[in-house]
Image (cartoon, rainbow, N blue to C red; front, side, top):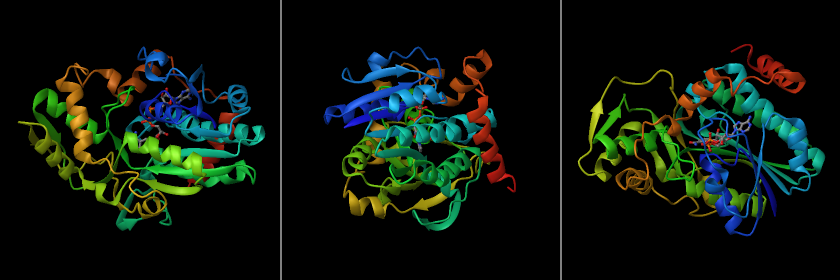
Length: 351
Ligand SMILES: NC(=O)c1ccc[n+]([C@@H]2O[C@H](COP(=O)([O-])OP(=O)(O)OC[C@H]3O[C@@H](n4cnc5c(N)ncnc54)[C@H](O)[C@@H]3O)[C@@H](O)[C@H]2O)c1
């Protein structure tokens, strides 16, 4: 299949591009490398992949790359609430306008399938267990952009282009484009480099998934054309932040937990997630455990492949702040972004 990965040179995309190429797919990666970390696409991506640099808000670029594609996958955007708060309008452009423009381009080009990378963050805070039928409860900008895109994409795609929304658990594990700013990767890398595991609070629950399992889910989704919304993870991989810290302490020799204040109010997500739908369709697809992901990340540090986990290159939030203040990344404005920003404002004005 001819598969276009928008934002495909990032943490997930660089793993997914290797996996899809290894299964014989023709992969085109479109990415602006927005964090300007000096990444070399030739090192991140499989040799067989075509790399197209560019901005995922650029309609003419998206129209060009969608031409002839069987599947268009959108995994660009800003990840997480703290990064989305740096500039709400920019987050809306990257996380809502961009996937909508890409969907319009995919539908116009006659691509049969559009896959949108969403997040379990759409559930926010919930008692009990959430599944794909649970009403979203977006707690911030990031989740609001994801919820709105999921809601509006079907109408934009029309009948000719099938939609899959992958609501990912928090991802961990090693990648050619390493991120160490998410909860597991951060704790594991710091434990390996300093012997300390910072823990603020710890009672919030988080579902987790390994980056390699996400790539396997994506391959299955495009090959079997699984459509609709899917939570991506495994029931056995729901943990509290405190349990994650304890697992890291058990896996990384000598590491101890530094307990701080209860709960980070900037990220009040708290939910237990059911992945039964995915497990029924693709049994065992997300079977890599938290322990395995922690070992991978600790090994990166202990073998020197990551020299210092607090370097800004591993942190999307710091990369975003640096790119915005250097002026290499900013609001595009223009008619498309203005139209979708107005939709976002209208949708969430009563919040
Ligand atoms: N990593 C996680 O834990 C996680 C969890 C849930 C959902 N997701 C979703 O998965 C997707 C991928 O996440 P990731 O961790 O790989 O993020 P990432 O930041 O590593 O990758 C995103 C890539 O998109 C590119 N990009 C973003 N906006 C762009 C634009 N306007 N023009 C050109 N390039 C642009 C960036 O340069 C980057 O390479 C995102 O949609 C994210 O919301 C990730």
